[in-house]
Image (cartoon, rainbow, N blue to C red; front, side, top):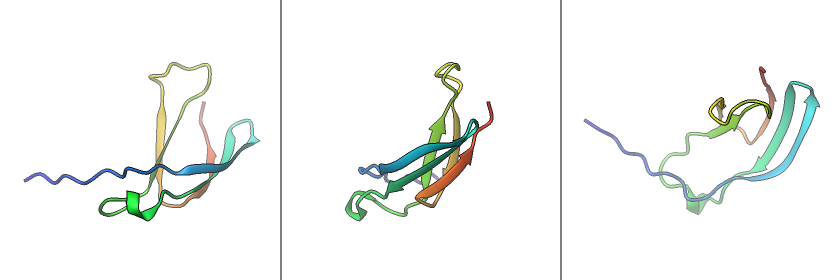
Length: 74
């Protein structure tokens, strides 16, 4: 049995992003409009990588809140 979940059309709008240390950032955003969310909203995926790393060296975290402090590991 397979389940297919509809993908949202909308994207969040970043309202604030800044470093809090050399390995941490603070990000805030405004959620996408409810009409662009199809089905159950499961949360946000944040992808990041150090500048000097390859584009293939991406790390991801999943959260439900629209305001987060992230400590990144080099």
